[in-house]
Amino acid sequence: MGQVRRLIEDLAAGRYAAIAADGRAGRLTEAELRTAVEQYGRTLVPMPSDGERLVAIHEQTSQPDAVTLDVPLWTREEGRSDLTLSVTAIKQGEAYTVEVDDLHVL
Image (cartoon, rainbow, N blue to C red; front, side):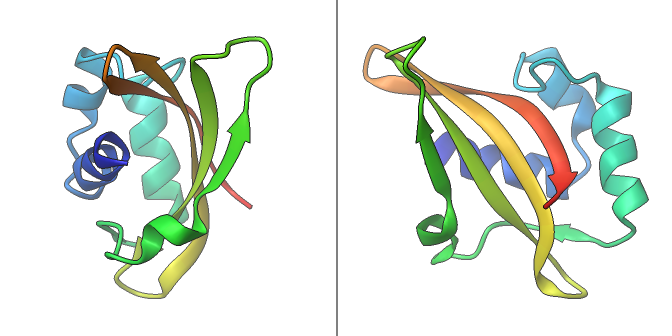
């Protein structure tokens, strides 16, 4: 979950270019990430320490070393928001890489 936390911290800090540059943006561009956050109109904050318990994990039968995660996001204005980050986590050796699938309101 450390990679997911780092991704959320980078989103909250507006480091969209870094997310796109290292491949974590997945199929989204830097501009699409920025637009999704800006259109939501609130200030993202890092995931609280107990936030991991709310992450929905979906097994992928087509890719056994990968799972899809739906991660709720938090904002300064509202606490837990209805904005969700969907990512694919792929196991590579002992670690996971993460790629954004979508950033949307659920």
